[in-house]
Length: 257
View 1: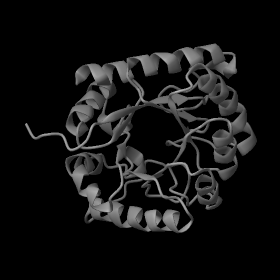
View 2 (view 1 turned 90 degrees about the vertical axis):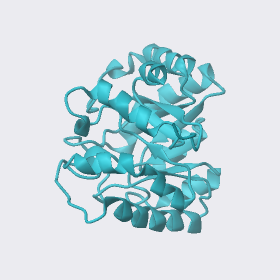
View 3 (view 1 turned 120 degrees about the horizontal axis):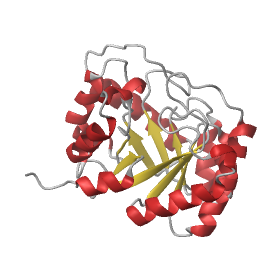
């Protein structure tokens, strides 16, 4: 077996939304704030080094959410988690500069933007001011959300690399220096599943861009019916090749290794 290139760390997903494609409504109307903290604590105890908090779903069929509503969903939970787990790295999953700014002020450490700064270009200025790391993700659409439209590629990895290289340059020009890249997965790339599997197979080509790599295959539709089993397979395939794996099921993913 080849020696691992990197130590792969796990980012646990906490969806604070009623309409997430995988676990929406898990924390009912924030009456479940104690449940959020408990879930966060369990993820960290199980081995997650980063927690990714999101207040807006971006998958197929998701709806627009105002910045005010998004903040209402995420800020109380973020503040409680920061108080309960002062050492954990907290990521805010948002494309809105207003939400990113408030979350960073409240104790978030980094920003995870599925639009790579295309949704709200001011987000670069905010992230730069806080000196925070930022995740830039490839998506086939300019929209903060995606659909299941099939896009065909002559060379999917080359398309992703060209896109991310341009986004990295834009972010750095705005003062963001610690950048993590995400090739996107599932519907963000195409409604045709084969491209996601090709990305997994060729993931090490992204090293050419000189940034840490994050991948989120967890529970995505391209995996088929056995989403957990196939998520664990992708974890085995990507372990040691990527810096971060974004997962919903931390215990199971670490156990399979």
